[in-house]
Image 1 (cartoon, rainbow, N blue to C red):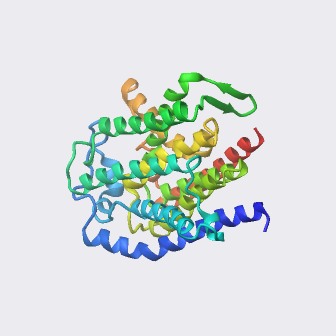
Image 2 (cartoon, rainbow, N blue to C red):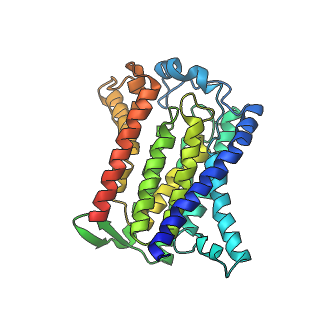
Image 3 (tube, rainbow, N blue to C red):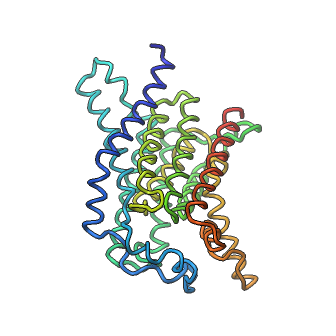
Length: 353
């Protein structure tokens, strides 16, 4: 078996195994979430600016208090389990073919795995506060300032590892070349991580966030593989495979929501993967759906502040399409199509650039 064929088998095979493992234990997770009633007790009634969330409540109030959160545990636990399963097998059988399937490596997967676990655990804490009706944020949970500070801290730690430990300070801009930005690499890293995290607002419709992140991490698996970073490609593929299983239970009508335990882990890890593959300047294309969602909110806030009126009926923009009469499943599937196209375009630009 050639190295190329083996690498393909490693990436796709382990991703498939992750999917099977997720399928096998997901019924137990779903039963646990419903048995403990891990959903919001009162539905959110206010927007982030303090106004009554009339349109949002009309569309989502009933589901908000009947569908459990913390579905992101499926992604977190499955991914971590698969990573360490193959790592442990390589330690038990160091001289066998199984050792070649280990993809926990210091140069490629330690940092994204660390980021994924830490951020997901913070998200889990936030979810626990939400379902317990605790916290001062809109709908409960950690305040916006605390979330932002935590994301900045994670970005600072990860960025410092890149800059001080690995000595990275070069960014690649497609068609223009490579540029050394020195110490500015660190604030750029933090900015990108905060931007990715803000894109977590896409988690607002059944199936929407799962499909979006599956196409995004699938795209980065391709980029990492093309760069010869097979371990990182496998890590991204495992997340993608697990997201497909999450989607199986999250498509309308959803059995659970991803919530912060999934969103916080995925968005912060996305930033790390983008820097590891030197793909920061195609990230806004590959993750274009997240950009569209965030921009819609910013435009809405600016319009309300300076023009004293809305541009969209509700934001993020997927709620606007719901408000004008699109069924939720139509919004989700059309956003999937847009997300897949953007991911393909981003991959092509990166590989050609």
